[in-house]
Image 1: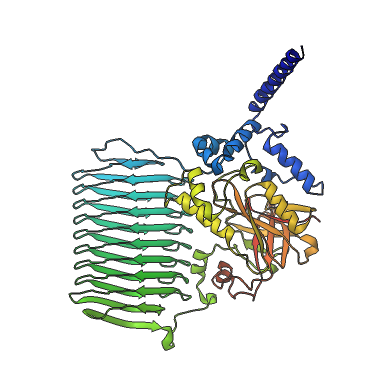
Image 2: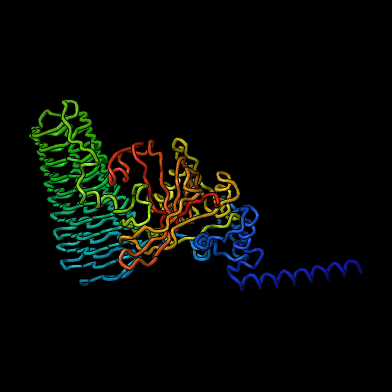
Length: 634
């Protein structure tokens, strides 16, 4: 009898839990379900924060979108093999949890034996495209324009073609976190040309890779014009470019102009090429803090001509590395004209330059900026010409104060209104408002039940790559490495920092610094962006006194990740923002003023825009959309 009762009770429990499961599944993301991540978050907030102020809707809109059933299922997978089991359901996980996951591009089996014109196209893997084509023209126009996270892959493109032309016009303009990969592009091609014009213009964090580009090609011309202009951060890499080519011609014109903190890498470029003719004109001009790495460039080339004209002209600081340049070449001719005339001194390293060159190779430097190091420079068999060359050790200098930089260049490097002085925070001030729109990919936080089971360190990058299916040297891998490096960076003097991937973790960090009577503040909307606004009804938080705050800024990661930190000596302000013409209220802004800038870099954008230098002025900025600053509640 007792055994029968036990079976009955068990059956009733099974029916009860089955009905509950069905109920959870039908109310995805319902915060009223006590087992849903959002409901847990609300309870946690009420327990940890000791005031009755309204919960910030902008922050809660980023809370986990998972329902109770999915949260439990994915948490179970996250607990297996360091989270690796999540990769078995990655597309489903990314969709349900609203994460940033790159599409898995499958090789295209399409055959293109006629001229093609691609417009308004994205997320494509071109495999065996144009292979063996005799003549013809393929054009890419307005491809991936204005797209968030476009991923395109060109593999074996125009391989072994003859007289085939490729044109990339207005390609991937205004993109966000763009990933373009060109594998074996034009390899073994005879004649023909590739034209990249207005390519990747005004991109945010582009990652563009050219691997085995034009290798073993014969008489093929590549032209890069207005390439990657006005970009922000990101990286361009050229590996095995023009290797073993015969009579190739590559032209880089207006490359990377006016971009901000962009890295270009040229490795094995024109290696063992015959009769190559490459020209770099207006390369990295007007850039802010560019980094260019030329490694094993034109090594073993025969009769090659390399010309660098107006290279890094009017750029601000930055670093260039030329390693094993024109090494073991024969009858090479390399000219640098107007090289490195930067506003503030950058770093140039020439190692193994022209070493082992023969056949009366010629190297010339004309109007060359400040040199840092020339090592292993081989003059034997090499004709060297230096004209108007500036060397710091000889007392010369091309350095200028950031204050002398022209207004036009300041506007290119630093958006007007991005930084301002504290005296601007008074009623009646009319000032430019920068573009405060959130340009990061849309993502959500993970619930702590999942986040706590996932690896998060540079030493665990292989596990993270496995979970999110990031291939070697992909932009996903670079994105995660960069964010982890910033999170693991040693704090600046007086800084307290932590990277967080859940709102619960953010609450813990904010309350550990400020106590439990806290409030999260951000600018109300994006109205006024890129226009002038009038400041009105200014209120200083904590009575306008020097205070503590915890500011949180987004980082690029598959799930929503914030870099939160507290720095000493700040003042926080709120102000109504008006249309200067109509005097009507359009926004309610939150600004933070850093009173101690002594540990900031001399090349910080604030000093470029405002003049002066570290520790000499205070610097203020608005809190951008979806960023926030925590303060004690008034």
